[in-house]
Length: 387
Ligand SMILES: Cc1ncc(COP(=O)(O)O)c(C=O)c1O
Image (cartoon, rainbow, N blue to C red; front, side, top):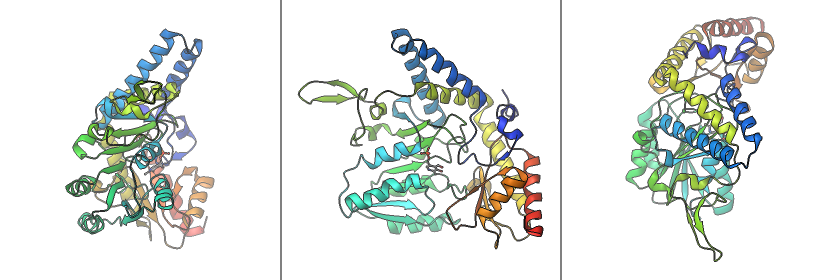
């Protein structure tokens, strides 16, 4: 398998210039085949010991593959339905007291805001936002001013979903840890797009999705819990399969591993498909994937900069960037622009918050140079003729 094969495994590219990986990527065809294969196998007799055991073994193998891709150990990985599950488990795993505070960034996705906003209402937790700016030193300085003795957690994106900017998360984590504050990184936009090594980053928690850069099914993802944080995190979402043992007097011991936070009957076939996606990327080679995404976004930025009046909001140096390039054209609203690109040019992009003029182009290794040329030609035409 080579990087150039990915386009052929992504049929949607015949119809659209698909610049929406950061929302939902198409699922790789072999992943769909794998999910179907194991769903059919399971349906032979789901409760038959050999079928059940085989499904669990493959599910556990997927956990190992996720751990490998993240630089984690398998016992630190929770497989769940999406990235937000991990954020909620951490959020509900802390004994919040009125007056405690939490630090987010100004670029967080609703998935890393709404769980906390809920806690503002329930527990009187105060939210503090560090401004995302291109100048990392300034961000770090502002962060140091925000963090104090009542800060219980930092929950921040590894890569901004608005502009694709890589936030200086290693340095932020070091500052937080000097004050004994744990750090949750929202990796929805980084896992599969840029190199991630959670042990090297030093973070305490890392939430990720399978349906974006991994090109696995919707309903896959999960989170990493650093081994020493497994016991620290109060178990609020647990159930059957979380336990090692239990009795009728209310005593129980939970599993030592992070999978104590998984419970009930799971969708094993989709997670096995997630494992298949990881096999494909590993066969291509992560270094090749990351290099291709980097080269493509560099070409995209250079092409966009030739469009008059267009402002690229994403930092230009790739070290501060990822698979996303966001821009605006003053005077042309992003919603209208996105609709025109879709209707006339079959270019699928994403707007951000309501009233924002910013348009997000998120790219993957299946995008090609014809799509960049089509986008630029469409932008020039829209500027000239209005549609
Ligand atoms: C930065 C970020 N965090 C969280 C999410 C939510 O991810 P999920 O749907 O996997 O919970 C998204 C989805 O776009 C995202 O971009």
